[in-house]
Image (cartoon, rainbow, N blue to C red):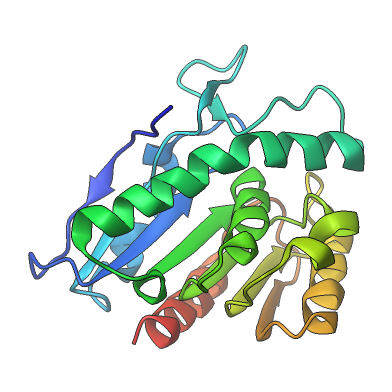
Length: 214
């Protein structure tokens, strides 16, 4: 299976870096690609690409899912992320090969379920990615994370402290686990923000992406 979705070409016309954006449950690549114009001017040689997740989302026209949310148990989330991981991993391989780039030239930006995929797949790759920008998500499989993490890319965790969809406890759990395993972790918590990305989060994300792709 291959992933497809919209992209925003580099302002310079030259692909020297890639930002891969992974949308949340019931959304699509076009929705998350809307973040790219906020960062494009600061990253002129960067391709922004936002594939649709591999499965159509029932009851949500135009929506996709990385896995079905029929239950919210940790075991179900771990199994769902593991099932979707090979498709995303292969997509990353294809992107890097198509543009002749190494892992340190690609950063992942995830939102919600997309963040769970980014934190599941990124650290399992043998060579570290440039970084993972994790909006409003959590680690899908904390019980198996330590044994599976073979690389430790920099991570920025961004969350709203009023998030009713992925409670802020997921942010704190991810922060503790990543710190414990020696990941370079930074964080931004937006007071009063629900399940969304605000301007402060966008600015923090831009600074992070500029740093890790410098």
